[in-house]
Length: 144
Image (cartoon, rainbow, N blue to C red; front, side):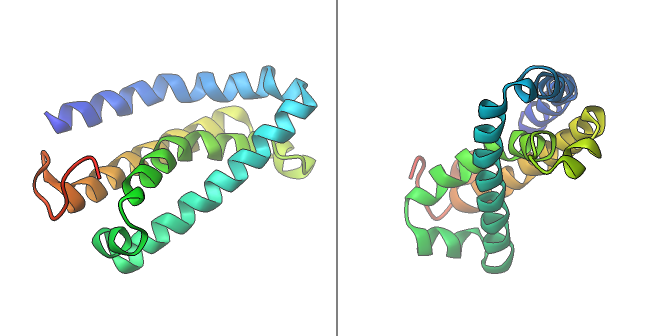
């Protein structure tokens, strides 16, 4: 069942990622204040997502959960949901024109989709390490 969900999410991402990046390029980019605000938030989310992924890669999800506490899974879940869109915003709404001009929206959408799929697989790894397969057999009880 989990495999079907991953497959559906991956196919759905192929449709949503280009639409999202086109929306950023055609609508949001024309509103300077909104674009700058969205870029700032997305840059922070991207940074936090990378830091979290590095912590989990080096220490393991169980050690990071013990270190941060019960809020780790909620933080991880928010970062998991926002990582792919944040990459798109960070590249397409970048105030440095050199970066924004060299980032065609279709290429960025492919990158967003790829990051989204890997992020989804990474989330499954973290959730199963913390709570076990299907929520059974892990060291912690869901939701925290």
